[in-house]
Amino acid sequence: GEIIQLLQMEHPDVYISSVSWIKEGNYLAVGTSSAEVQLWDIQQQKRLRNMTSHCARVGTLSWNSYILSSGARTGHIHHHDVRVAEHHVATLAGHTQEVCGLKWSLDGRYLASGGNDNLVNVWPCTQGGGGDFAPVQTFTQHQGAVKAVAWCPWQMNVLATGGGTSDRHIRIWNVCSGACLSTVDAHSQVCSILWSTNYKEFISGHGFAQNQLVLWKYPTMTKVAELQGHTARILNLTMSPDGTTVASAAADETLRLWRCFEMDPIKKKEKEKANSAKSSIIHQSIR
Image (cartoon, rainbow, N blue to C red; front, side, top):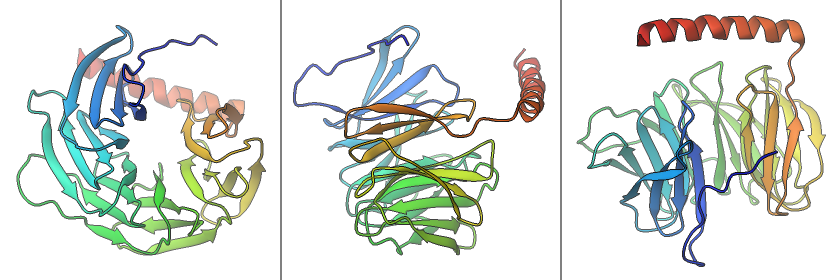
């Protein structure tokens, strides 16, 4: 229950518009309304660097190893190599309006971006700079802004996207073939989607009109449960590292924690065993 205040913006008109943890934990990327991308060391509670390359609000961030990608209000996505002084290594220009959703696939092969222009772009991983970057897929079926983008953890080329108030649909894509695998009308603005790592399910967060969370079975897209409680639209969802608990942050200025994906004890033990075997292999290779 302890709360640490890491930073506060000095200017009253400047606000924090995005945050993202590096995969390994201790560093937090922070995007601001004044076009900055900051990198913070949480243990030391100090700012490591301030990366300026955008000229408008940075609304979304996503990590791929040491590459931090940031999406801005201008519609541009920048790749930052956080290891080097000249951090800005690439610009992706595939949106005409604000980038509001941004997610690297778990294997680091693709970056999915959703925009206020109702577009979803899937970008290839571009190691090394130079050249003109074009999306490998552009999906135009959504009729509203696409803030919700999420990669399936067990099928690396499957992407879920959700549309805003004038769309309200969740769509599942195969990014290799470009096929839409399924579509479901959520009857509510879709703000975010999280896949479960413990079950073949995902959860979506909604705004107008119900402000609810919905649990879906995959691939049948049947509704398992609706979680009510928020009184204004859900802005973001995030998952606990063990995959059991979902946190929702809403415009009603509350954070709520939901036990959505608790594992049965036998499965949990098996998973922990597999993970500890994996980590010991990694530790040996580091030594």
